[in-house]
Length: 98
Image (cartoon, rainbow, N blue to C red; front, side, top):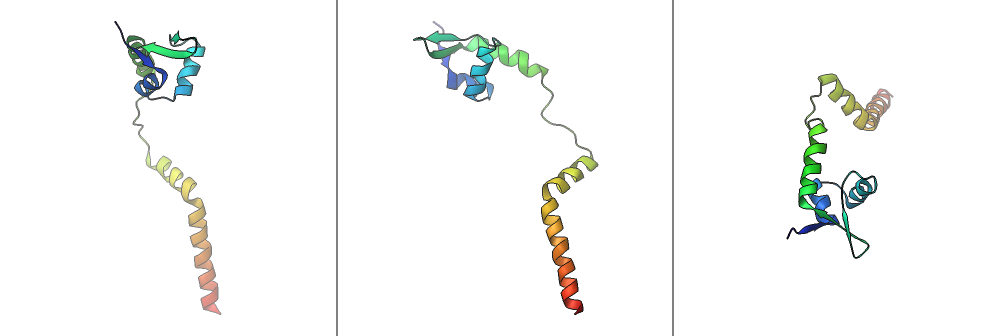
């Protein structure tokens, strides 16, 4: 007898949230079985085959960034601190001149 996976266990196997897994079931992309009228259960074979087909289509997780992209990211996430330091330096220069 094949043991069925719970919603939480199937979501962990696919590395997604249980809500996202429920949406996949509602869209008909993944077969599920209702037990007791409301509890979703999944066959491990269905989860594994879904994982193979969907995750093969994804791009690799490691993406090569060129230097300019990393520089853009740096300034985007640190612009406030850079501007604050520049303003502080300007204020120190103005104060020391008088």
